[in-house]
Length: 156
Image 1 (cartoon, helix red, strand yellow):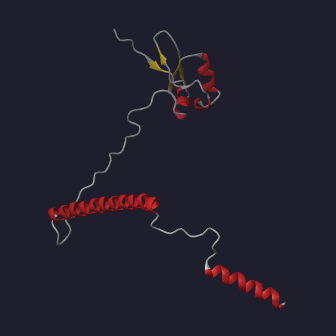
Image 2 (tube, rainbow, N blue to C red; image 1 turned 135 degrees about the vertical axis):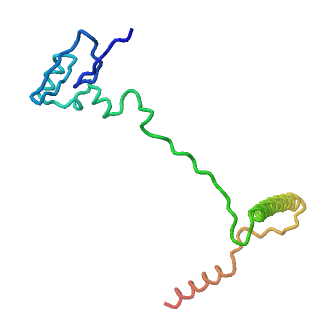
């Protein structure tokens, strides 16, 4: 058996049979209220949105259940490749593949070269192939600048 329920004009709660109060305004508009509290607040012209216990307030502040029809998620755009004037799609794909293979070869060569350098440094340190410079040696340019400073101070 289905029970016919009304909705309160103020609180938007369900009103079951035998409950509530019906009010008819001067404009012949009928309003059905759940409680005397809701009726009094309606006649005082207090907005239901300002009261936290009403459904209107909950809807305004996004509380409770979320409407499924509210916001739709955007579909992600998919990349589509098209042929360019003077080049077919197959040619473009071939060229892209060639570029990626060239890059991978270059990376492998760079790695091999780096490993060779590291092995040379390790072996070079043990045999002493490179002569080490003394720690206190000052480069020639810095020596000249220091000498010029001394000459300027002597002249005065």
